[in-house]
Image (cartoon, rainbow, N blue to C red; front, side, top):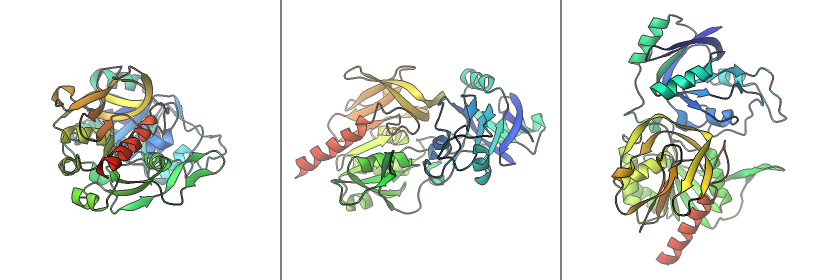
Amino acid sequence: MKAILALADGRVFSGKSIGAIGETSGEVVFNTSMTGYQEILTDPSYCGEIVTMTYPLIGNYGVNSEDVESQRPHLSGFIVKECSKYPSNWRSEMTLDAYLKQHGVVGIQGLDTRALVKHIRDHGAQTGIISTEDLDCDSLVRKAQLAPSIVGQDLVQQVTTNKPYDWKESVWDIKDGYLMIDGKPEYSVVAYDFGIKRNILRNLVAANCSVKVVPASTPAAEVLAMNPDGVFLSNGPGDPEPINYAQENIRQLLGKVPLFGICLGHQLLSIALGGSTYKLKFGHRGGNQPVQQCENKKVEITSQNHGFAVDATTLGGEVKISHINLNDDTVEGIIHKSLPAFSVQYHPEASPGPHDAHYLFDRFVEMMRNFKHKVN
């Protein structure tokens, strides 16, 4: 079945339908990862976005029910050059096309993804429409122009959990799969769910932490009443500026408990500390972004997924920039000079991506240990 992608600036691409039949709108972005499409599909941070995969063949190892980052896909649409019909992997349970259909995700294949990505890099990420129903190009361009931008929207409320829950699953083991941890871990962590990825939770459990996940709007007083050793600020979708309730809760937690933020959590912590954010032209999405530690100049290759960045000029004197992006010098990490709080823009849990930054979970544990000793 024919499908059309139309961008708000008038650029149109024709292809063939994959996944669900229908029409969908969202901000068209691209991800440069060669693998990890299942984790990308189920990452809540992609809520409101139509994701283009730059690698030409996607779906070649199929989809399984274990390697998901949330219960379902949250993105608005999916774009690939070619969707593999014949997956080959001993853990595969279905094809990518079947998975998209199962979850109602509208997608398109067969278009020139290189041309699309070059267009986004030149003209910026923008709203687009994928349709298998309306094949009138002018009509679709008008719809794309009228569709809402993700700027100014609170997308967190679309992906956060409705009620608190405990997480006990640890990281993948080649013999036993995902391990379930019994017994009492040394540290207790409350994790704010702004769109949290499961592999973050798995890494916290593997770092000897018990983890309770709470809704994004949970008051700080309620979190402190749980008597955690640390509070984690998760990744999530869209613009951090409208998430006022999270910013205020973080301000109330500062100094009272160690804080560790990733991605949106990093942006929210920065705002709570007096900083501000801005929208990147086309964002950072992929598994090969070079980041440098400012203190020792060590370079790590990181997994990233964000369309907004912290404005370095707005950070106060008590906030130190700990990491920078070597492609464009944007802020990739901060640490407070006197309070137990730090964050990074990228994803140390990988999934997909390298494990160069896994040390950050150990840093969080060390921060909780030191704070515990200081208080006692």
